[in-house]
Length: 364
Ligand code: SF4
Ligand code: SF4
Image 1 (tube, rainbow, N blue to C red):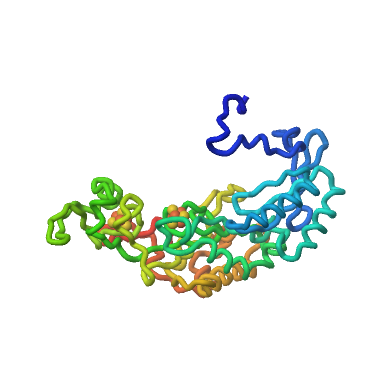
Image 2 (image 1 turned 60 degrees about the vertical axis):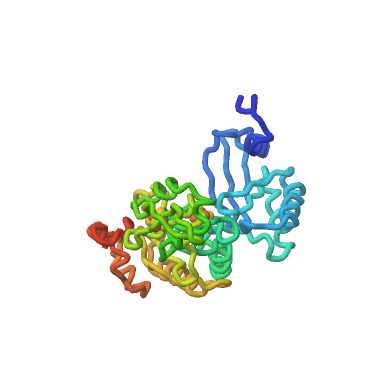
């Protein structure tokens, strides 16, 4: 029994406590599912039971007022059950088709707060990371960029008019705690400058051996510096070796590398985790750098929209972005999207001999 001996004041309670009755009853015994309209799914069980799901878009950071309102909707229609997806969609589930329309009407009556969609051949919510407010190594914001992009792509959330699903992801640094390594379109925060060492703080806030061993390229070495007339132990960075990954800063807060001009956004394209039709693919770098331009990031929004709509106008039905690019050839992908091809996009391991700045992402 997974519930036995579970300590519930450390971490969340066991998820099985939150299954709607129809889900708990039919666990592992679902036959098929289909999308009946944008944002509405039905799952059919061996028992004949049905679970109808209405998916609505939400944001990653939301107010308690909005959560209370979601709970009111769940109380009124779904016996108090709802779920959040990893893409920050909220799913309301009911066990009878007759309960779907009243739920949809209720959601629609609340203005634009609960847009229904995010299913099938459309753009669902962007899975994303923490951004400037909540993490220490971001090269761009997360929620702000996502909001700007999704505002522009909103029609693709509420409809299913694309050739296939398009998964967009954002990670605000290349630690990639988002899903950018395998998304149709990936928005990735990148640093372009090495860490700046604060010698006056380093001995107080860092374990020097940790900072040295954190660097995957061996670019951080022990050093000495003079602070207030006293010689101290510190580190130095071989800037030519540094690939601006931020690992050293994770270990040592006196080595920040955030920089207004150095930081920005790279766009990667063509990844997927599904093995339908073709094997899963990693995303490939197609735009090495776009500037950070808060609060609406117009360059990034335009770049994502351009790739999405070029794909939408040219791909065959069911073809994901990576499959489309491979069928027409990546040269044609760059041509059709009007994206300049640069040497930074090439996966050429020989670059590693003298620069250490290479991508393992792209074969051209
Ligand atoms: Fe932090 Fe990087 Fe994750 Fe962004 S992607 S939240 S900066 S670890
Ligand atoms: Fe090494 Fe990365 Fe720090 Fe550069 S940013 S010194 S590559 S750990």
